[in-house]
Length: 307
Image 1 (tube, rainbow, N blue to C red):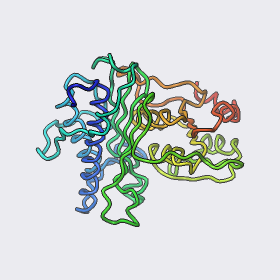
Image 2 (cartoon, rainbow, N blue to C red; image 1 turned 90 degrees about the vertical axis):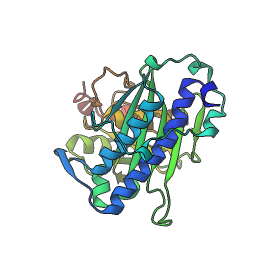
Image 3 (cartoon, rainbow, N blue to C red; image 1 turned 120 degrees about the vertical axis):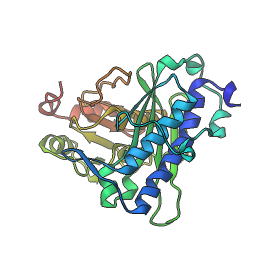
């Protein structure tokens, strides 16, 4: 079945299973107790879980799709991995679906895979495990159109033996792995960074006059709040976010009817030659929320900081 499916469907189906395996690696590292923390920069940590999960993802996808460009947060690493980290299986429920016409002729040169092996590293080291996600984003001709978001610790407080949850989306096809919800009407709930705030981030937040603010870690986790109907808007007036943070979340959010742009309302380009930082900030809105009306509330004094 797999070989008869379009490239995009095969890549998405493989990424779902690979993300699950990366999630197990993340849990295994935590269970051993030695996180192997390295400080890459100010407020920028890396653990053994980040490194190992990325090696698993890149080695697995490279073996199946050797000609596709893959860009991971943790840079170039030793490609050798234990044999049980190599994933060759695919999600057959995705392979059984009809590929949207727009993707049937997509070639490997049109695709870039953006990988954040452990989004929410700071939270991972501090024990906020439900903030952690594995992100595999598929950009097609520069647009974030497919994505996988795996939560290694989904519902772990209720089910300690949980193996997590995996959500996927493809623009033009839809989403899977969860039940999309729209946020409540008559109020504004905004999600924002838990640990990377400054005056600009706060100014953008206050301009939205939220009834409630949810401060959590991880871009993937914050976009999940939008998709689950727990928040209306995610705003981050900062240059701290990267393409691997937003590619998968943007694709899944868009596939269910939401929107993610920069602070000016423009889409980011995810081609392999672009700069990695999202230098114009991030604004995302849930399905049913008027993205333009939220954009208009962001002060020009804030927008001017992100030319």
